[in-house]
Image (cartoon, rainbow, N blue to C red; front, top):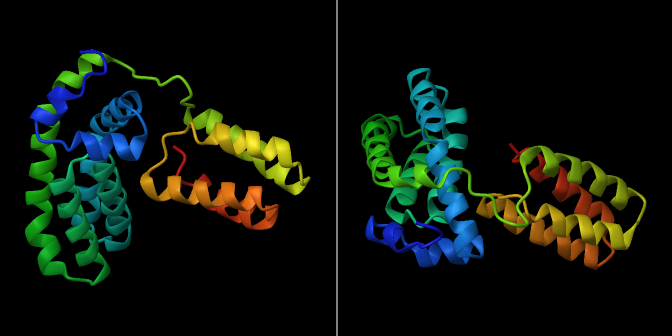
Length: 200
């Protein structure tokens, strides 16, 4: 199957949008693999938060899934998660109760279609870094920013971009990079601290 994305398009994903978000077919397939792999964990979390009426945690989880689904081009599913996020934000319990199980069923159906991705095993992109490595990079980067080390800061921001962040965090990292280029180290450090929590 390699990194041919035709079959992903055939099952209903907007691969062009996905590749635009992730940067290359290789990174896109890697993102789809992660999305597939995290299904059981995410489904359980949503069911648990819904059952326990923990709408704050519910909102955070469906927000992340909205971004992740969008990043792989599962646009209808992304919209469904966005509706659930809006409902949670507005304390619209009726919509949450009505749409949670329907959305989870759509999520599950997509996972069934994505099953062939298991055959790819672990997809690692050349410049992609693991969560553990990304956390070390952040620690070094914060030190470099504290020391006003311009060259090292730029190098480490570049290295950190190898971590497969969600769309929102990717945008924040770009913002941090702009601050580094403008010698605004404190502002860059604030953003880096903020996205640290998104590293798994």
